[in-house]
Image 1 (cartoon, helix red, strand yellow):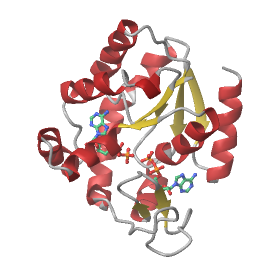
Image 2 (cartoon, protein in one colour; image 1 turned 120 degrees about the horizontal axis):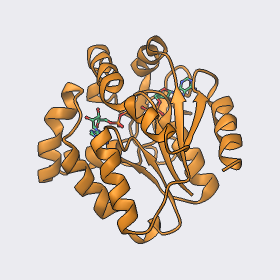
Image 3 (tube, helix red, strand yellow; image 1 turned 180 degrees about the horizontal axis):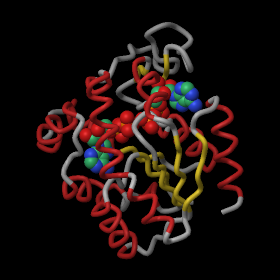
Image 4 (cartoon, protein in one colour; image 1 turned 90 degrees about the vertical axis):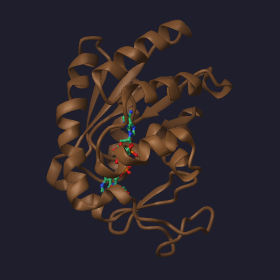
Length: 215
Ligand code: ADP
Ligand code: ADP
């Protein structure tokens, strides 16, 4: 299964990607997690990306495409993957098409998670993440067993630098301008499965599962 997860920041892509990855036994590839790892390690990519990320802007397409070109050729990608947060622009989607053709891969589905902007602003204020694993919680809607602590590792959770309300609003406007056109792009290839993301996490999961079962 080769799946793209598309949707605004805070739609629940990371949350749902974990379920899908576990249920199909394929890796979850999150460009946001990969970039944060680079920022943490102060790699040259991380140093370049950080300024864009903290302002709520997209990291330049070529940096992302180079990063993904390496990632998709790793051994664990041979039988499939779920792309979480990539592609995010039309040039990235076209670049992905070229890359997939060169390694003889083709996409099975694009899961489009739809959530209204005002719901997202509310959710993001409560988001807490475990940086090393990318596991994501919400103080209200998906709390960890122990406040502020990752269930699996016992390490601290953090509030992301870019989850401040003003930055979330900026990211939403970037989504509408740069990423939403991808829905049309993939509709023309008959790949889209539209999902109502504004319901309980479990219900979203079920809707995605039944859509993917048909693929
Ligand atoms: P969210 O899960 O809230 O949508 P991500 O963790 O996917 O956020 O991304 C965080 C930030 O990392 C983005 O705001 C952007 O700066 C950068 N980023 C992640 N993926 C991409 C991408 N495919 N293209 C450009 N920038 C990206
Ligand atoms: P994305 O990867 O699309 O940015 P996340 O999976 O990180 O989204 O979810 C954003 C925030 O909203 C997190 O705090 C998460 O726990 C919470 N969340 C995810 N799905 C739902 C849902 N269906 N209802 C309420 N909160 C949710």
